[in-house]
Image (tube, rainbow, N blue to C red):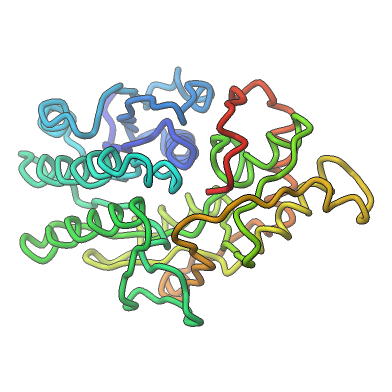
Length: 337
């Protein structure tokens, strides 16, 4: 079967990547979707069960840092579009093993860019998925795409470094890159090291939600379907060489998040909510909030479709119905990322 477009998704078996792959496979039967993933601990083969037998889906197990493999893919698959999502993302782990994050997030991006640029048939779009954490913690300002970046942990530092690599290919070669900086994405199938599924998994095991420190912290959340919609909008309407913030402005305090989930999972009266919260020592570097403006993306016509209430409802329901999807590691008792 001949396909009109060949799309390479790196990290396509991960949380966001699997949702993107499923969306592309189902909505574009005339496109061939190639998923390059090494199936790290935070990936489940079950995430892609619905598409694994589709004719327009191809899975390649491999490391994005493998120069020979990545070059071979670009030489043989005639890749038209790249969505680069493969990354190490857990902040807590980045303090413990910064070199691993450097290898995957920076070196992996360099390998992918070089192979894409040197391919006989170069991609017409290279979308790099970054994070709002590159801006660092807000000091009262709302970050737009021109705000300076001040990463404050090893994870965000490697994402910022990878961004510089990506944008250098635009500056030097006019290679058609676009950068998307995302809020915290949540939804079904997210691994249990992230804050919402970790709280849910703890509660399912009758454990308390552990929260870093007592200083009020908040995060901005975006439902995974809306993140996928944003990436596709950027692909179709975004300008090459540009950066786009991806967020809805849904800011939730971590304590508020924990109590909301306790109510939904445990159905306890308000007087008992505090008994399900446990405050633990804070990190060395505390990021209070990352407010971003997504007006630039909204001007392309994108709007979030899933409200916070509906997104949380869908997420809680999925984890309640899929308790055996992820194993319950002892690391769940770590503070939230």
